[in-house]
Amino acid sequence: MTESARMTIALAPGGHGAALARRWAVPVLVGVGAFAVCIRQAQALLNDGDTMMHIAVGRWIMAHHALPVHDPFSFTAHGSPWVPHEWLSEVIFATAYGWLGWGGVVATAGLAIAAAFALLTRALEPTLGPRRAAIAAVLALLLSIAHFLARPHVLAWPLMVVWMAGIIQARDRDRVPSFWLLPVMIVWCNLHGGFIVGLAMAGLLAIEAAATSPAGSRLHAMRGWAGFIGLAALAGLLSPNGINLYLLPVKMLRMTFAVTNISEWQGAHFSGFNPLELWIALVALGGFGLGLRLPWSRLLMVLLLLYEALTHVRNQELLGIVVPLLVAAPLARQLAPAKPQFAGPAAAGQLRPTDGLPAALAAAVVMLGFVATAVALDRRGLEPPGAAAPTAAVAAARAAGVTGHVLNSYRVGGYLIFVGIPVFIDGRADLYGDAFIKRFAQALEGVGDGLPALIKEYAIDWAILDPNSPAETILDHLPAWRQIYADKYAVVFRRAVGRKADEAAGAPPDRRP
Image (cartoon, rainbow, N blue to C red; front, side, top):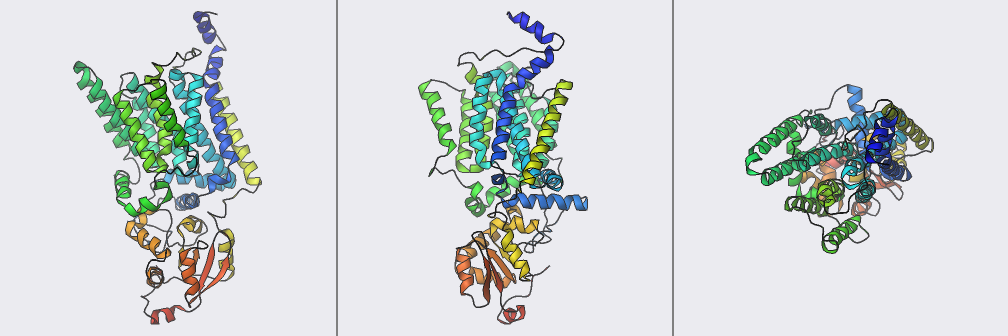
């Protein structure tokens, strides 16, 4: 069949839907596979106390019909200025939990992850062809799977793919990105702070445009990109945090102790298999074995993303998702031609179907599958694992009548907030600050007399700590404390003497708000 005949079929009545289905067949398969991975490891998606903290924040916002401007969840930072910068994600997760329980939370995260990798596959298809696009998306999934968690970053992944694909494809065609990407930036900046990376990547591509454009058109290219980036930066201000969203990454980078000690901010390690090893091996194979080359500007961007992935493990998904988009066009010119696409009236690079009835039917199928999955998971009794949600330990503390200030380990702060207990600390590192986190960590590690001093200063009444930790050993040897519960997830202590006795021994006044 000739190409013109194929075009005739595509444009004939009923052919448009067939063309649309063919263009999305491989991306949908990749998305379904990603969703299946999420559901298979459903409990692992809830293995982070921050998930429960985010749900609690979302419930607070919906209950008060407003965003908090001061911390309402801790007693150590109670009343300190704090506006949640991921408020939209928190409302989404709280709504999913309220309607569909933990199954709804996992299904929501899984749907976002599936959409991200389906969109990535679709964005790569016109350049690489279906097979190569699917392989690139699967490699990206492998690099991102360690960060498959029901947290705000996964809700932002589909927007990141749309944004990155839009600006990179525009640069590959020597165009300025479409202003239709600006609404993406507005939603992204209210979902997750990673929107800063999108602006930074646009800036790097603008520099590339200025450096590689012919002299006669360089000024025009610079003006176009500068206008787009300026509007995008303004769009990033359309958030309750405003300019503070831009200052937050700077603040976090200055928190040297927290960045060094919080696991997701630590560097990559290779004591076991790390998918990053596979990526590095493939880069070596492509460069040294196949002789594939990249323009110097794209090579520098890839190296920058690799550096970020090696420095902070939470950035590995950036490497996995953004690099295929960056290298697709340069590599396609060096590889054998991709399998021709089934032509149709929709643009080849379009990221989402707009074909009316087929799109509506697809959306209905997705929603039906989403609800069915959420209900099935919830009926199966899905809940966060004990490592993130020490339910038995907290139940034992309440049964023992424990009240007052709690000294909690870092990992259980989110669960305590979720069940309405004011915490000593939780995952909001930007709220507590580097000095406080350092003092807390050293106290729980048994450095000097840090733990007894912390107990006195903050008038601690009970503690929920990690088993076999230095802090547990210290409290075991303090005469004013006794253990009331222990399991493999948490150990609970309560103070055996009254507050007045402690104050008589030199403790400062109660800091209870």
